[in-house]
Length: 328
Image 1: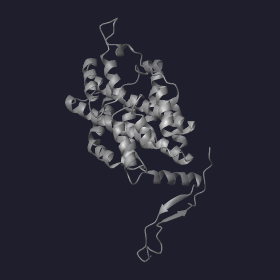
Image 2: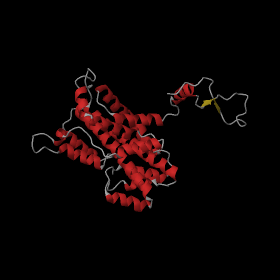
Image 3: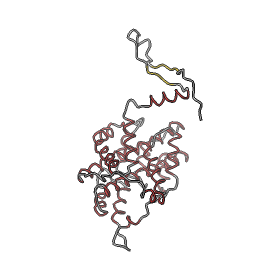
């Protein structure tokens, strides 16, 4: 995190150190997710589309001129294009695949849990760094564990590139939604009154996650400061709905090919859970009550003879009669 960004947030938001430090660290967690998503796209371009470094560098340069415009996309193109001055290859191919970390991603995931906010993209990015660090174990496992026997399915390269652009955009929106959700929850709990539009606006300059997408995010919260989640902003909702099939094709290709897409898949799972009125949590809650006698809420059907105006509450709280299991 650049010092200039830290003080710009402090001055413009006119916030005490505690909440300023909080938003700065969540920024770093979003950064984890963004980098992992780009890494997964790189993996698919290389191993499913069969693209070389120069070709990928050109593609990322092109993407950086449009809706994916960002500092991380910009430097990805430069990293992929960098030739090795010792061999005839590229520097990226000689970098050991073990990702380091300073702990801010772990802190963001811990804080998300503390605030009861789902942050699966950041968590997936953190887990991916843990797995990358076990290089020796992975080398040994590669000699025993295999992927799909049919290898990578045949794909239309142009279609795949178009799908990856759409999927990356959607996943980035979901990732920002999760990070901003953590800030919103902490702000509401501690009465910080953090202005999320201002927060997004200041991330546009001088920081690693600066991106053109932040202009839209800023506008969304300026339009509706009480927005429950970035996903339900009408503009973003329309884009996600229109591009979701491309997003699903990318995740499906990863599964079929044995190419791990933990962050991309987590983003899609988050979208699919958040958009549904009903989730299987009813069964899980029933299981909890069965073995632990937890209080549950039962949705009762209104009787035709009952005046709904007199009895507006269609929910009733009760306890099942099962004996509680001993908790271990």
